[in-house]
Length: 129
Image 1: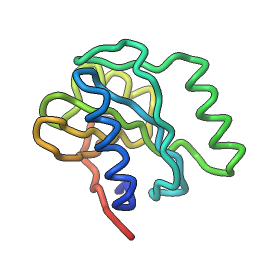
Image 2: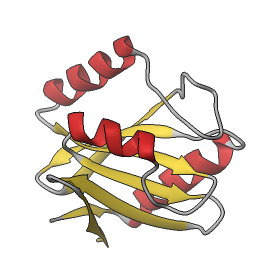
Image 3: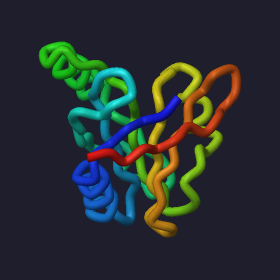
Image 4: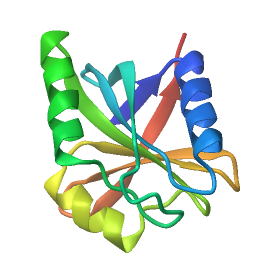
């Protein structure tokens, strides 16, 4: 399993992360199979440097947008001001949101992706043209 993004999407997520500092940023990744087609940036309702949440109506809106474009929510993105690894809170929510979780470290400038499949496991981040 992997998640595939274009270089411009990597740049978009990096900019979103930096512009949200000192808080975590978040977004839904829309696509087909493992390929991200569109990024929907969301507001971090927590306005926190150590957590993020998305208002329920924003979550519903993201799924409506995906459906209207014949896409799926294939991933959840957020930034960390630390290593790009899931926190204990992330792990809890990964169990109930079984999509790829893409994390960007604003301190290490690195992307890593994970999925929950009976346990948290890392998946490849593929950058394609």
